[in-house]
Amino acid sequence: MAESLRRSKLLQAMTYFATRTTHCGKAKLYWLLYLLDFRVYGATSLPVTGLEYYASADGPVPLALEDELASPDQDFVQQFQLNNLVLSNGCRLLSLHARGPFDPTLFTQLERRDLDLLGRVLADCTADRIEERRFLPTEPWRQTYELSEREFALIDYRLATPGDSLALDAVTVAGVQVLRPVPGGR
Image (cartoon, rainbow, N blue to C red; front, side, top):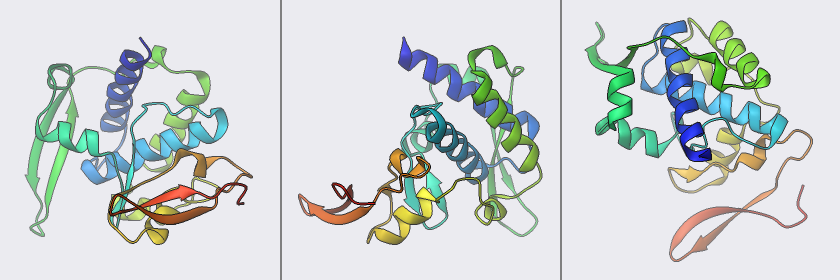
């Protein structure tokens, strides 16, 4: 039941951002979902969508959603139309068009507040401009990306907890560099 609620919240959050912002391509959508999840997690210790985000040079990437955009599930296809656009500068943009209206009833008051805040403040921003804004007390994506020696290190939600900056250490597990919390480290 919790997973189906998170899935519904994910699709509805995407609907919200697709209908309330401009330039809502894949990178901007990833930033908005990441900021929503990490802001709410910082206040409640529970993310909205339950997605796991990975640090890349361009920002946070939810790899499960990345895979789904390549091969969408049926509920996704019913909710969204994906459009591949080529911009005047030659860049490609995957644009999301919601087929239905946003349903706010799935979200708590805090979640709706953060959806609204992000949707309003970042409505006209492009993905690269979002990176420059500060919406979290610490920046878990940047912290993870800079500490990791590899692309796509998992971003720990606990980095979003205010006043509890989690110290991380890079270790190698089974030949792969990963970040892990340092016990007692702050």
